[in-house]
Image 1 (tube, rainbow, N blue to C red):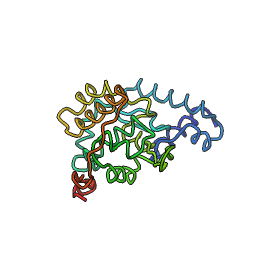
Image 2 (cartoon, helix red, strand yellow; image 1 turned 90 degrees about the horizontal axis):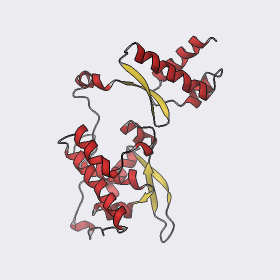
Image 3 (tube, helix red, strand yellow; image 1 turned 60 degrees about the horizontal axis):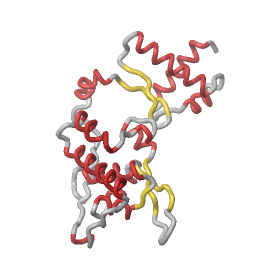
Image 4 (spheres, rainbow, N blue to C red; image 1 turned 30 degrees about the vertical axis):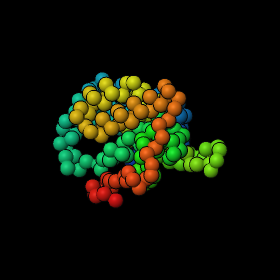
Length: 227
């Protein structure tokens, strides 16, 4: 197989997949090339797309490759999907997800302490959406479950690794520019600020008690009804 055909096959595999595909997976399908060669081909393809000013490019997300459209074309893409937007996370979901992403692995009790309310229902919702997963058990009394983010979380944010997340001190400016006026974004900012304050003080604020005195309403993102 000549090199041009190899490039076409790599391009076709990335185009056809519904989840990010790694260079190792590409190499296992196109046995003539190594993972390093697959990565080089992707770089060449992106160079060609840029040279000819194409509307798309290949990006690395959640450990694999996938096609993305250019940001400057987003206003027309939004029109295409108007009324078909994916269900958004509730404010409680955004807040809890932010805490887990910056503190993982973390137990529910620790999340409760930072948020000041019981988070069991919210974490259950995040588990069902595959945005977080059980990451083991903590040492000590009771050995509580620990939670961390997943590859689906990386896809949700469009990043390749959690190390690409902005630092808590950077999040307010970034979210302000990207989602100005979004209450969910402000909740995320507040959650990250709480994590940062906790990091600086070394203490965790106690959760409100009892749970029944401060019930938490979790929103079913699929239909907007309270559970």
